Length: 224
Image (cartoon, rainbow, N blue to C red; front, side, top):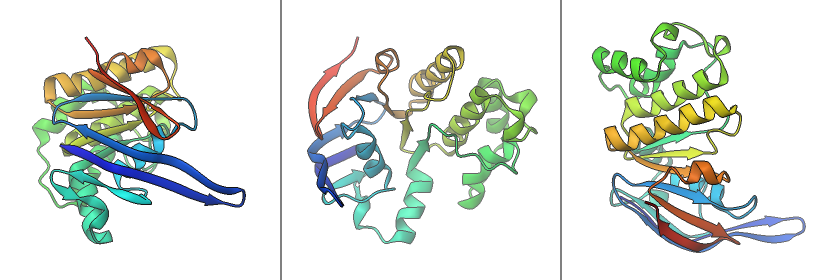
């Protein structure tokens, strides 16, 4: 379970103080598929980054599996992020000198966890990357790179999968494939998924949708 409690984030700039988040309270249950919607500058990506532990709140807290993540030491937070938080970015963030398979197993290797070849093979099949397993990222299409990034997260089986505009650089065909894969991860693997998007079609594939406006939750609704 993920909980944000009275979460606030203020940025000090040359022009003054910018209130990105203004007291967010949010609970995300295990196995949920949540879409965070909002216009540019609404605070939706800031919220995701605070949940991911890549940014720190001005006040408030984020709890994942009963742990207040922003009270952890940097080394402890690094371990928790490897094991409990999977982040998918718009820019893929693959290691260019590693193959598809090597990129997927990298978090497990860093965490010294066992690598089960059967699971790797099955996931490559699901991702339609079996014939690309030894290709480098530069030899892949944008959709194939994003599927590799998703596979890297799914193989590590984190408590929550966070996706920040994961289809922003993709064409319509690859967008549909990536969104279908996120739905499959939630439905078949029971993966908790939190998707940040401005696209109503993408947001409509979730089971629950919240809208962020001026750093606050403006709407929270279940989807059929």
